[in-house]
Length: 73
Image (spheres, rainbow, N blue to C red):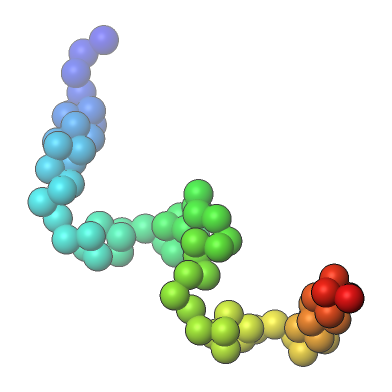
């Protein structure tokens, strides 16, 4: 099988990707693709509690808090 231009380009990128700024590389990918393979705990590290709760319904937060209270009893 001949060595194609496509394969050469891939090999070249692999060999030189370290020379690029990480933000420059990451900007080429969708957010969903960048997060693939990360555990939920890792995705949430560094976020304030308020930021973690944004987007959740009050009922869901209250349900979870009740669940925690029952576990502690």
